[in-house]
Image (cartoon, rainbow, N blue to C red):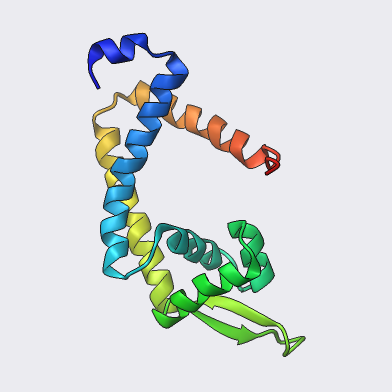
Amino acid sequence: MSESDTEQQTPVEELTDIIMGLQRCFMMNLSKELSRGQMSFPQYFLLGHIGGQNSLTMSEIAVKMNHTTAAATGMIDRLEKLGYVQRIHAENDRRKVMVKITRKGSALVTHIRQDITNNLALIMEILTEEERHAWLSIYRKIFAYCQNKPEEKK
């Protein structure tokens, strides 16, 4: 994008372009790692969420992913085939199927998270201490907003 293009943009439009560019930058690195395991970003997102829980039902997974249970089942089928999750029966109700991350899945999540951390550390090196604190403060506010924002109606 040329300097004259950014001069004609509103700050919100410029921020939109920046965010989209950053997403591409980070997603390209993430996608390279994920393509080795033949997994999509939504599957990785789901795997990370499952890893943060003891186990989840298919209904809970569908809600988290904002998918139908059938679509969530398809994602879990793929992750299970790759050895990243396993289905287990609930202890209190054998009819209820739970999904749990495997060691292999946890290792992948840890590896990719570390890769993201390393990339962010490189970015932080080009910032002053004041800029680092400002960036983190701004991202905390944005994250808090996103966490508390009511779900939009479709």
